[in-house]
Length: 237
Image (cartoon, rainbow, N blue to C red; front, side, top):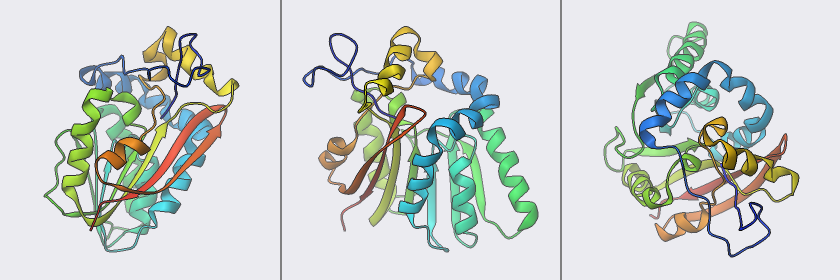
């Protein structure tokens, strides 16, 4: 997720420093355990268009090795598994509550197709449960907006490690609002970061390029005033 701010709290000053994360990684799991029951409503109202676009850009091919980091309640993971029934699909998240909802969602899917291949586990983006250069496609929705800028390099280094050469990376983040009304979420974050689930606006394109990812597209999507960026990038061959 992404948003940018300035001296007055709005994005009127382009040279203002970006707002950093104010909820620690140690707290994130508990915050989202509490939000798990209502997250799908929020996701449908504010994130669904960006998430659907990310699935389109992912262009999943059956038989791939796919990892979703920060799988949440499985809103994207369900679609990935449907498209990759004979491949390997792994999802991790810090929140046990979110994972429980994801498991229930996938169990319903598995009843209709018992040949699906997937796993869901508690895990961290800082230490991915995957071998080096073993992943064809890595998907990550609404996580970097929770991570301190100082820690983003470690996560991207892990993403780069597990992806195969030429492997695909699809990201969705809360981003800096490009309209004045969309900056409402910045004001909410300033007053109460946990009300926003700890999310604030970020922009990842430049950071990805620093890690030698080839960025193919970066799109801005706004839904219910909520600003998202969708990024498609590749690890160098």
